[in-house]
Length: 312
Length: 225
Image (spheres, rainbow over the protein chains, first blue to last red):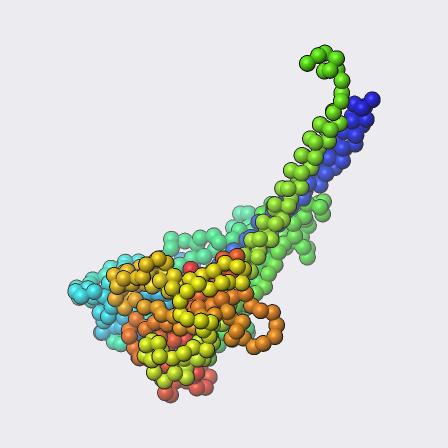
């Protein structure tokens, strides 16, 4: 008798377990994917926030030490100085270049003019190098920025360090840089949206001048928008520095950028967890049952680069 | 064990109930684990971003404070008292979550990555990625330290941050520049470090729109990781 009751109870339990299994299967798939989606959001926010906040960190060398934005823009709305760069005057809402001087002793000045086309920088000895060494902190492959108060600027890659004569062999100069021009090691971070033409899947990618190509930061990015608080047209219509004919020209309105608002929309990596395209899904998937939908997550955050503030 | 005893079904229900209970518990535990770990990660992320904000806040406060000091060498000589100091410049401090920090260890870690014994000159002169200036590496010394809430306006929630601000000479040993290092300690081991190089604005310097600059300008602001 007891066994009969137990069997009946077991059947009822198994039936409810089967139902529970179905819902828990859906729940476990969606929960894990949702957690992954949120984690990707956090990675995106953290990576972008860290580099945007540091943009414009300047140099202590030269007559007027200060943030980069005192002389050149540190936030550019396009890909700059990396493979696949955009031409000057471009505005892209899905790309950003962030320039800053890291904690480095590789800061010096030109001691002789660097003519257009020249690949040799004659530079001042770095003051904190040990005795007998001139350019202790420069190395092959270092990205260096030369900039002057007229707005002329260029990012070079160091090909060789000639310590004895205190020279840097670099990529060719596009314009004339006069003696006294600061030359400092810089970090350049380029973030942009890259869409695979075959799969149409988009990634947030990161690139630097010395990297061989783009490195993925986030997969399955449905949208990426940078907003600078200044009308897009004003950031790409001049007036230009150092002049409108320069290959390295930039719009002076870029110096007005004080904040960067970022919108990232991420989608589930699995089409089986995405429903039809619409408000919840930028790119439709194959799921028809709403119980297994993992809607896109969109975040918008604004970062004020600390080095671009006029007053502190 | 007799055949008669084996034929009896006493206790079968209990066995089945226990098995079912185990299965249900496993499913429930997996769901709870997923949910709570995500909440913990989100909390840690929020605290970490908050720590950066706290470190930045004490930097902003200190920059205002040092702007009124005519000679920054006096600051480096320890001749100026900060507005924020919750006791002698050393010893253990209790944090809001019950953990503690030792101010001397905080300074030693900043100067030579060694919390234990005092840093030697060789330690502090060592060239590293974070301290690339060799003999001109900063010699951090305590300036301001205490709960962040004590320098904020009254009212509102008590911020759970303990902040430490250190000062050092700049790499060029200029009288017009000074280095600041702020550290914020918070709940669940949240910790952020911000290093700033500040300079006195030169007379006649103007901003982009022609306005006069603040007496102290930020040369560089970096979050150290």
